[in-house]
Image (cartoon, rainbow, N blue to C red; front, side, top):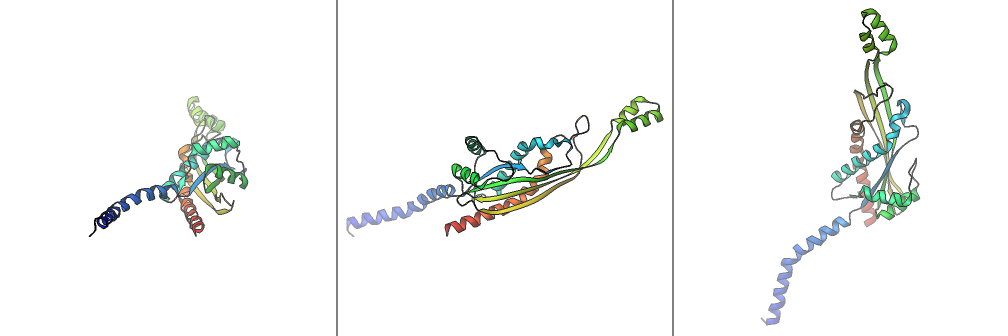
Length: 248
């Protein structure tokens, strides 16, 4: 066999051995980079979503609740959509929001959503709203009348004071989320879903006056985490479907 032919054969064999290992590394990196990217915008409360909240105390916590909801969705999407979808970092979204002086209230303007999505370099944007956050209380409270009665019966003013300040309360909490998936390129709503969560017969934290329930992060998670777990697979399937359609 001529010497030149032997050299070409040796090179071919070497490439056959090296190319599979060489091709996997770029493919893996390129595959991750090509995954569809999604941004989750802030959650807002519908104007009449706070049912049964005395003095509307929890309405002042909506920005904190929004952060919790975004974190819940981010975790769930990354776990369920591993290898299928990437979520934009909150810090990057905040930078864009500051740049645009973006204030989200009520329904989100599709043109604004598209602008944010393009600046972030994402294909999809998820918007969300808390359309219901309800509280229903049951139980008894002492009050001045009971305290005075106990004081007279027992002849003990201290016992009357204790009875008058007694609060035995149980409560149920319900929450409802509505989310939408929007195609950044077209502005089309690719899907809209809603879900309800409930926590029943739980003790409540009451402020010193007994008139307002204190904010409770754990309670928010208990109500909405099952909703997030229910809605996330639907969101991921919609992204998969839209991505498959775009590649055809």
